[in-house]
Image (cartoon, rainbow, N blue to C red; front, side):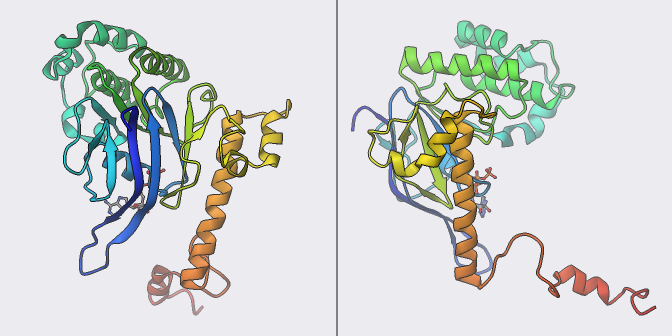
Amino acid sequence: MADLAIGVNELDFAYAQLNGVEPRAVLEKVTLNLPKGSRCLLVGSNGAGKSTLLQILAGKRLTRSNAQVLGQNVFFQTPPGVTYLGTEWAANPVVRSDLEVSHFLDSIGGYRYKERRDRLLDILDVDLSWHMHEVSDGERRRVQIVSGLMAPWDVLLLDEVTVDLDVLVRSRLLDFLVQETRERNATILYATHIFDGLDSFPTHLCHLQLGTTIAPSPLEWPLNLEQAGAREAVPEEVRARMDDPNRTGSKLLEVALHWLVEDKQKRIEKEVREGGKQKRGARGQGETTNSEDFYKKYDYSAGR
Ligand SMILES: Nc1ncnc2c1ncn2[C@@H]1O[C@H](COP(=O)(O)OP(=O)(O)OP(=O)(O)O)[C@@H](O)[C@H]1O
C-alpha cells in the first residue's frame, strides 16, 4: 500500500550458527504494517527480537522474507531516508577518540543541514567544543542523536537510544520527534523499556512476544476498543487498572507490564515443553552448575 511506511508480513529470521549447529529462529511470522506519520513503540521482553527487527528494517541484516520500507523490499535495497540509531554506536573507538564535536558533525555533513543541526544542538544541549574522549555516556549519546537526526529522515528506527538521557533532554527530544512526524509525515519505530513520560508519544504499539508479533499489529494508541483485537490485547482488568485514579505509573506501563508477564509465562511454558523444565533462575534442589561440579573437585576444605 502506498501510504505504508513499514510493511512487514509473516517475516522470519534466524541467526546463522557456527560449528554445524542449526540456525536458531529469532523472528517468526512477524507482521507490522505502519502508516506514514505514525509513531510506534516496540514492546517486548529482553531477547524478544526488537533489535533484530529494527536492524532488518535498516538493511543491516538480510532476510528473504517480505519486509518493505517506503515501498521497497529491504532485502534488495534499503531506500534513502531511513535512519537507524542503536546503542552499539557508542562503543565505536572513533567516537571515543580525541575528536571535537564540531569537527565530527562537519565530517558527516552537518554544514549541509545547518538549520536542523543548530536546532538539534539546542534541544540536545550539546557543546560544539566538547571532545568525544572527555564526555559522559549521556553526553556522547546526545552527540549521536544530533548526528543521526540532522539530515531529514522519512523513517526513524530507534533502538533504546534515549536510555542515558536526562529527563529534560529526553522530553524535549520526544517533542521534536512528534513534531517531525506531524509536519513532515515521517514515521518512527522505537524500541524501549522505559515507559515513563511516554503516554502521549505513540500513535501505535507493537507487542513482540518471543519473536512473534501479537495481533493486532500495530495496536492503536490511545487504545481504540473498536479496533479488532484491541479488547483481547488489553483485557478488561488491565483497562480497569489504566483507569484507576490511584494508579502510580503510566497507562502505557500498565499495558507493558501485562504483556511482559504474559511473555514470561509463555517463555516458561515453551521451556518446559521443549526441555521438560524451566531453564532460567536458580537450579532446583540437588542440581549443580557445570562450574560448581568443576570447582568441587578442587575444594579441599569440603571433606573437613
Ligand atoms: N548476533 C547474534 N547471533 C545469534 N543470536 C543472536 C545475535 N544477536 C541476538 N541474538 C539472539 O536473538 C534474540 C533476539 O535478540 P535481540 O537483540 O533482537 O532482542 P531484543 O528484543 O532487542 O532484546 P533487548 O530488549 O535485551 O535489547 C536473543 O535470543 C539473542 O540471544
